[in-house]
Image (cartoon, protein in one colour):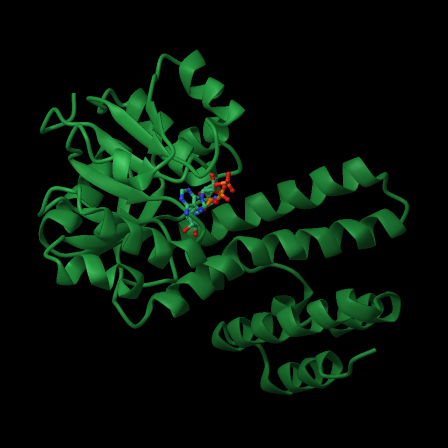
Length: 295
Ligand SMILES: NC(=O)c1ccc[n+]([C@@H]2O[C@H](COP(=O)([O-])OP(=O)(O)OC[C@H]3O[C@@H](n4cnc5c(N)ncnc54)[C@H](OP(=O)(O)O)[C@@H]3O)[C@@H](O)[C@H]2O)c1
């Protein structure tokens, strides 16, 4: 049962909203759930029903406030947060002091300002993990990191969810959320883009596509673990940190286009780490020149 025995209200029955719903259901924390969408009940709600979660589904924001929710999660795409917040306010049916959170890592509190001005505690709960669908998403949410912002009851509600997930909280600073989210995108979408380029190059070297994809992903996962456990300085291996100019030159003879650009850009970042680890200055300078030479 939820702490207050009141239902949670999630607006936006998409990937993030349904993942959170299933995670909270699995944690035994839902006294009830209202879901609000734009169209007739989507077929993907069957995933929830199959797992014993039977939400009340509404099409109109105005219908979601009864029974009074313990809190609202706005789980719509970033650009729709402000219009939905306004709709909530104009419906006038949300009991005062009900906390309202959105799930965006970059939008900040601005889109919720009209609700804050009307006295609602507002905040952010940003799951720092990819949520591709409700089932994989709900399991990813357990033990994940969460960006959290919001004072009073909004912060309390966000932290309540983080605790139920067995997760860890990153306090977010208003004004720095775009930078926080850019860092998250580098680590998530950036790695996907990098693995796409690496897999393509390995495939061109004669490795079957599926094997190449699995091999580069396994390699990246091991490197990510090393960085998590030891930090980038100790986690870095490879020719740049060894000062192996011949190998870097050999790589560059076979790389072109975006793969070469990526290799050089990331090589320069690796070179900074190598310098900090004491790479010989003359070797570092020659490597820098080699990496500065695009295709
Ligand atoms: N997915 C992730 O990996 C992830 C991770 C962390 C944070 N987030 C955040 O979570 C939020 C939602 O993202 P998402 O990935 O879940 O997007 P999504 O899968 O596209 O789901 C958004 C849902 O909101 C619905 N919607 C849009 N406008 C609406 C409105 N005016 N009223 C009611 N429902 C409306 C959409 O309806 P339709 O089905 O009709 O389009 C859809 O069901 C975003 O702020 C995103 O930044 C997502």
